[in-house]
Image (cartoon, rainbow, N blue to C red; front, side, top):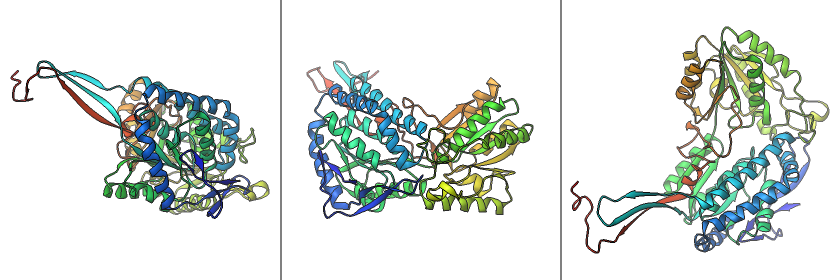
Length: 493
């Protein structure tokens, strides 16, 4: 199967195009070939999107929302098929694949509801016989650049608010996971989205991503990916005066206090650290544990890790799937060596799995380090794999300080039975997401998603906050006095 761009309601002819293979990370088998586009494809999509947006913006918002309801209905109907495709191209286990598709379904229905809201504000004028209000206005053509680890959920966080707000979009999915984008293009077409509203251009970040950021008709860039790449997006976007929304890396921690329910904490840590093989921006990679329960917590983690099943995620019994590719394997393993050199103690894992079915895919053993200090590289840098670093703390205050002592600020968690500590933690943890007695993953679509410091640039995906990325505020004044009234001059109060 050859995956080609979806532009202006049509799929491009595959003849005379350049393609690259899409590989199943669990089996090493080729799943499809995906088009590698150039700047001319971005220009073609931008022309179609710009022309369509002029008409789309005039469609009443509740009518725009009706297309999202239809998209959600089709996604729900095809949930199992979509989940199977997702697991094969990305590697996450099938229950996670189903969960990700459900997230997209939820976002479709949630954002469709905004079609009858999109609230602005009315406010009293300082002058007599004058009305004042603010409304949300669409921006135009928006560019969406999404990562491989959530090939459909993150795209829905971005595209659905863009649609309901009256924008058209160009979506560049990751070249590692283009099949979900292709499936969504078919759903867009079946739902009857007008030509040019939804466009998908496949290709690399250096070619297609750069062309999108530099294109004069694309007014917004919404990017999710690594912090290094996000910095480049911000720099190029700034030079081109783009509105840029960035959601980037994390170095998330679970704090376990001495009064915690340790069984519950262990479950939360394992799910947060090894779900999606640690390839989530919200994954737990640090466990900050009070010294009184450190040994007991470690022992319980080690015991539970023995029962983790590793393999092809399409098998319902598997709990940990592969990492995305060989390059990821090498990066993860390099951090294991760094940790050893820094003096951390390796308690479990720390190896690329080989032999049998492991030889065909990209599998890394769930790994646990202890005696990690807060300044070590494995405690500071994003590894993006199934690796936990245990850091000891002798007080609540020390644990908060360690949590906040990284360049990222996406997600954090604390396990405690003390309500006072819980409220202090939600106030003092410097992250965009805070969990109490739960792991670092599991964000819900009706709340803002994003973080502080090196994780983002102040914008948020998901929830009503996502509309701020894809709309401009317009202030409207209606003077029905029949005479010239000068604000701040004729309004002595």
